[in-house]
Amino acid sequence: MLLWACGDKIDPIISTIYLTEGDRVAQREQAIPKLYAHYQQSAKDREAYEVIAKKNGRFILNYVPGLSLLTLSGDPGSGWSRQYANVDEDVLKMLVDEGVTFDQLDGVEPLDSKLDSLLISKSPIYRVRTNGSPSL
Image (cartoon, rainbow, N blue to C red):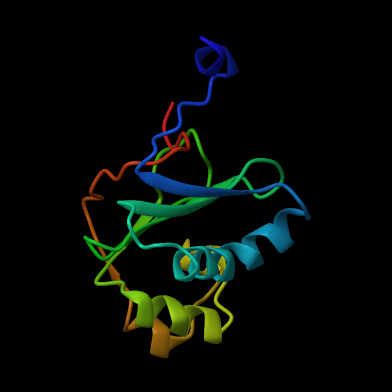
């Protein structure tokens, strides 16, 4: 009853970390490194790993290693905005090493052409499980 009253439904097969500190820019810059570190430090026994910015950043960054999918919601409540196929640990690490931000992945800012050719946009977007609310 208490969980229902809080309004957040938590799916235990999804490992979620929440960003609450920093402004919008800082949270969106931290998204990929936080996701990568979260996944690296995990037991790798979950269906999905995600970073959700609850306050200023307002985004969901979801990684499903079994399907090699990286899915973004740049404005929770408005649906998933982008999804990339064939994303594995090496691709995530490369994104971190290159300093790619959430806004670059979401198409708000330009992405280096070397990385752009590596990231394969998937359409239509496959519906992934999340502890966030990409759609109302």
